[in-house]
Length: 264
Image (cartoon, rainbow, N blue to C red; front, side, top):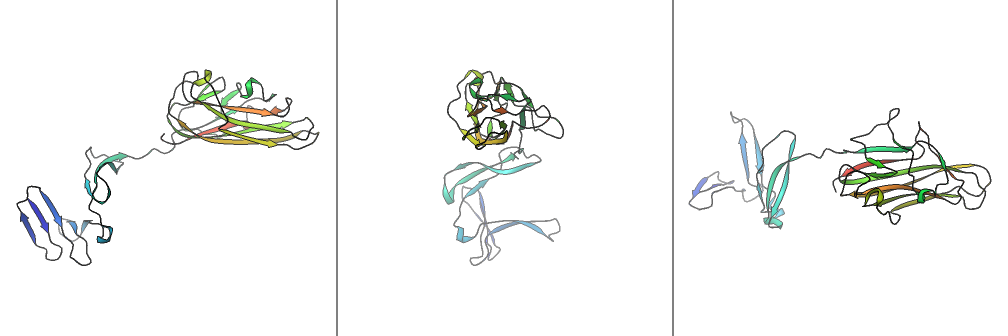
């Protein structure tokens, strides 16, 4: 049976069509078809209304096929067909929880010769939890200066390397690099996805500075940092082996932050 609600006459007519349907017609001029659901005394009501004629839309929206639940929102789960005549299946979906991982790790003591250990900082790492420093979620994993994750996703990693240099020369630079890998601590870390330099200038006196570098990493495999998972390291380098990379047990001088931005 087909029920047609005529917006111009208000006439309800039945047909013998094999496809059961209800149509709310426009008035043929300036009012789109709509269905109004009134309150029990008919003093007010809410409407479901068609898009305007100018949009040319003839799509179908199918009500959710999962159970209604609090704190959900309507989402198009799937689409059949395309364009103005597509059929969209709705569902009650869960709102994204927002940021689920925010972590900070820092170097607790200074060291000389930033090119040691093939350039990456392998020791004296600690999770920053002192003072009013905060974190979201569980700590990321660390093994010998290699860091990995417990949750897949897209991550923003930003590192700061504090330094000072005492040697004389025209080029007195310090480098900081974030390198990623897929094989965990024993895997390879190739290329320089993110690398920056600071030039402390010519001179003979002690000069202090810092280098900041960052990248956005797509993490698809997770687990302990000494297993075959997505991971990263912080590398340092300098024009002189006497350069000091600064660390401190109670302040952030060489450190990085990790924030999960969303799903992979």
